[in-house]
Picture 1: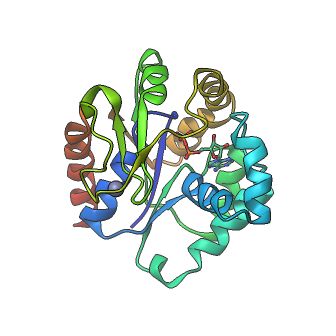
Picture 2: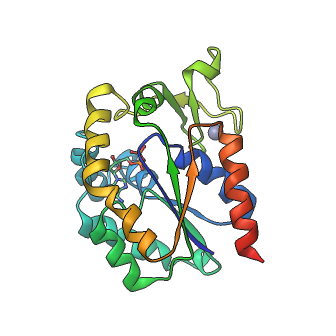
Length: 210
Ligand code: ADP
Ligand code: ZN
């Protein structure tokens, strides 16, 4: 199964991605995570990506598409994979169509009014990438999944979040229609709990596996 997770920043793509990856044995490919690893290791790609990410803008398509193309050629993707945060533009979706066949696009829909608070209150595990919200942490500073340290992403501040949401509306939202026309879109309401969202997604994935 080749799956895409679609949704605005803060819709809960990353949270669902770790559950789907654990539950269905699909490698989790997050372009955001790949960029952050490159930034941490101060690679040339990291230096370039950082200048866009810090402003809440998209990293140029040529760079992003090449990274994904290379990643999908690795052996662990042979039996299927899950893309999180890619594609984010129509040009990226068209590039993807040239190299692979997608089975399902899961679109997590969330009220826009919720996203600012979700993102600005988000804390992420340094080691496994799991996301938490400060309102549910009760002061806890370690990941309940792996014990890693929790931190706040540099782009999770009000100003950068606003530009990420604007970029989503202008460049990524059109992908909903793109995949709907191809008959690949599965919409799931993301305003509920992560458990409820995963239950919906699981039903669909189980049916698809048959
Ligand atoms: P979120 O979905 O919460 O915004 P991500 O971790 O997916 O977070 O992405 C963080 C940033 O990395 C984006 O704001 C963007 O700058 C960059 N990025 C990630 N994926 C892509 C992509 N497919 N194309 C261009 N830029 C990307
Ligand atoms: Zn963790």
